[in-house]
Image (cartoon, rainbow, N blue to C red):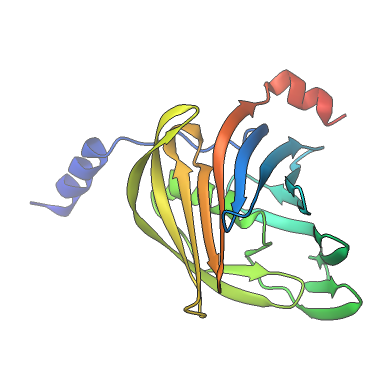
Length: 237
């Protein structure tokens, strides 16, 4: 078959996905740690002015809290981090970390409690929270994962590899959700991270499972509420 006919056949045979739109939302999750600590977790994505966004994650149990926030720009294709913060508190012990991304000087400044580090920024870097936004966009618009992704945290910038591990239908309070299962490849064999991203919800995380040494952490989707465009516009003022 001539090449141009083959290309035409593939174009007709493969339905084009609509361009992925970043939609503000609030989602709640059931949180569990080692079947000992349970609570609720919330993800909130907010539209700010222009192409700027804020993404927040918080989890609360009877003995611990964890919060993360990411401020970033999104041009419809690429996530560009601006500032990242996180704080974990268990009983009276608290840990903090933050990163400021200066794209003019191409330098990142990270801080973990009192320790400060700086390192050069690489093009395409994402932070520990908004990398998920980039994965979701790539899955929809490319039909695959991009990468490897450069994850820039409070210590350094490192390439992180993710692979598609299959598809699965999850039973959730929202009904049955068709998901793409994503596996993050860690250098440490004692660590495993899996994401289940819901196709019909713009690849929103429906489940996350993380094995970290001897700890098992899971979150499962309970509710999802997208924000209407008018409400999102008013919130950004």
